[in-house]
Amino acid sequence: MNVMIDNRRKCNFDGLWGGVYSGAVVQGLAGGLPDVFGKISHNGEGTIINRSDLEKMHQIDFDNFPQLDMICQNIQLMKKKEPEQPIIVIVNNPASTAARMMERFFVQLIKDPDFIRELIQLVEKPIWRGVQYIIEAGVDIIWTPQPMLSATCISKKHYQNICRESTIKFNKKVKETGIRIIAHTCGNWNDRFDLAAEEYIDCIHVSEANLTELKESIGQKVSLMGQVPTGLLLNGNPEEVYDITLEQCIQAGKDGGFILSPDCDVPPDVSLENIEAMVNAVKDAEVILF
Image (cartoon, rainbow, N blue to C red; front, side):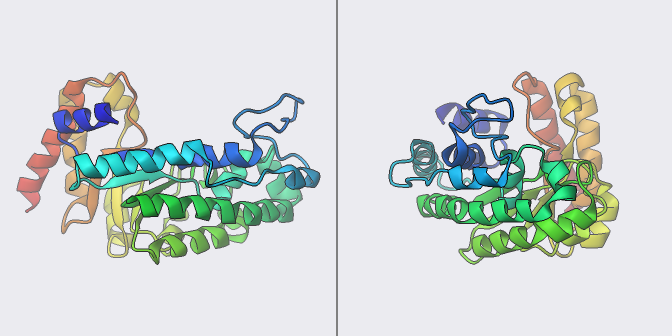
C-alpha cells in the first residue's frame, strides 16, 4: 500500500487501487473443489463442470474472510493517508464471475445457457455482500473487468440474452449507493458499446476503440477511459508514448469526460520515463483543449 502511494506521488497520476475482490469471491465460493482434471483448485476457477457442482459451492463467512478484510483495511488506510484521491477496487460482475468459475463456459453458452444463468444467480448475492463491505470501508469507484464478455469471445446475442440482465442489476445496485462504476471492456466491444452505455455505468474503459467515433456516439452518456497501448508503454520510447497519448487526449478529451490511462494494466517493467511522458502529454493536452 505504501509503495502504491509513493509511486502515485512520484509519477503524479490520480487514483489508488484498493485491491481485487474478483479472485477472492471465486476462491471463497469454489476454492478446494476439483477441476475437470480432478485436481483440487486453490483459486476456484474452472470448477463448475456439471449442475451437481452448483450444490458443492461454499457459503462465504463474511465475518471471517481474510481476503476481503485486507481490501477493506487497505481502503481505510489509503483514505487516511490520501483522502483526496479516489480509491478503486476491482470487482467482477456476476456474469464475469460465472465465466471464471465455469469449465467450458463458451460451450455452455451454446449447449446449456440456462446452466450459466443458474450459476450467475447463485453468485449474485455473495458478490453484492462483499461489495457492501467494500463500500462501507470507503471505496469511491468499482472497476468491473469484462474480458470474457467481449466480441473477442462471445456474440452480441449471447451477451444480451445471457449476461446483460445480471450486469444491469448489479450496476444499478452499486449506483444506488452513490459509488461510481468504470466498466473495463477488455477486448473488442465495438458492436456493443451502445449497450454498455445504458447499463448504469459512469465510465467505459476501452482498449480497441476509435475514440473519435466513440466520443461522438456515446460521449454524452458516459465518460471514456483509455487507451494507451500496454505494449507501447512497455516497449516504446518516451517520444512515442507522448505522441500517442496526446493524440488520444485530443480525440476524446474535448469538453471533458475523458480519463487517460493504459488500455489495460501497467506491466511492472514499464520505465518511469514512459509513465512521465504519458502524464506530461495529459498536461499539454489540457492546455490545448481548455
